[in-house]
Amino acid sequence: MEHVPPGAARPTLGEKVPARAKAGDLVEIEVLVEHGAGEAATFPADLPALLHEGVRLADEASFGRGAPPQAVVDPGRPTRAHTLLKVPLVFLSKETQRTPMTLPPLRVVVLRRGGGDIEVCTSSHVVEIDQPTANTPSPKVRPSPASVPQRTRNERLQEIVGYLVLGVVAGALLAGLVAWLRRRPKVVPPPPPPPAPWRVALEQIEAASVAYETGKLATKPYYDRLSDAVRVYLGRIYRFDGLELTTDEILARLRKVPSPTLPFGDIASFLGDCDLVKFAGYPAPQDEGLAMADAARKLVRALSPYASGQSWMYAYADDERPTSKDEEAP
Image 1 (spheres, rainbow, N blue to C red):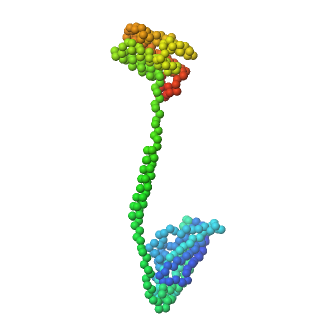
Image 2 (image 1 turned 180 degrees about the vertical axis):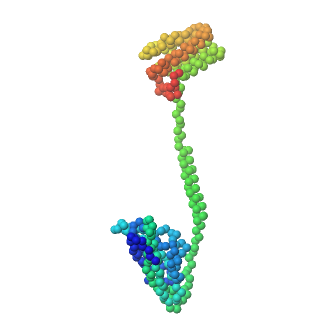
Image 3 (image 1 turned 90 degrees about the vertical axis):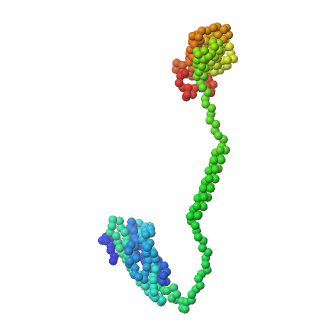
């Protein structure tokens, strides 16, 4: 039974059926369906039931479970498309002579968008079926063909061997990478920047003051350490060796510094008082010695680059410039 909804165009069928075949051989029937673009053509799921006993599908169990046939749009007519349907059949004949067998009409379903599918049928065809030995008079039994050596493929073993080879290659690459990384020259991190000169001076003054106040340091060595801390600090700022120059030589160097904020009088007074104890043996009392430590701290802070908010105005060495760690005022 065919069914064409009103307003739908009947698809055109082109059928290709062999005129002769042998019983038991695979015979492929081709049906070329021309239909509208956007539609899909296929055989119904009950196709095996439409065939009679002498005609069978080659594999009834898998029929309709594969990929659906693809429609191809006609390049010359974009509104039309065609789909090639193939059916593998087997003709079974019990007759010893050539027997004509009828292939019944096959129903083709054209699926349309929105429903209203089209059902059309192919024509019936007569196929002459021969038995495999029907055309051979007095056939003789043929010997079996020569045996062919059979090799069994162990897929599981192949997977294991493949994984082992992959593991060996990956291990070799990893070992090479580790060896290369070990041979590379190691990058030595740069040494930490030296502490700021005013921090060093303040730490030395503080250590000498604590030792002097607790009685661990005598008066003369105490004044000597205060004087050395200030001398070294001045030398690092103005580029001279403060420990190798006398007080007069240091003051002569400082007179050449073009700085109106330089506490020249305080420096001369401090170094002179220290020399008085160091070289003249002046017995300074302890309270005066502690006041000398405060004077030394005051000089260091006055000459620091952040004293009273002043900018950097002294020619420090490149490795003595302030870092982010020393941004706070001493």
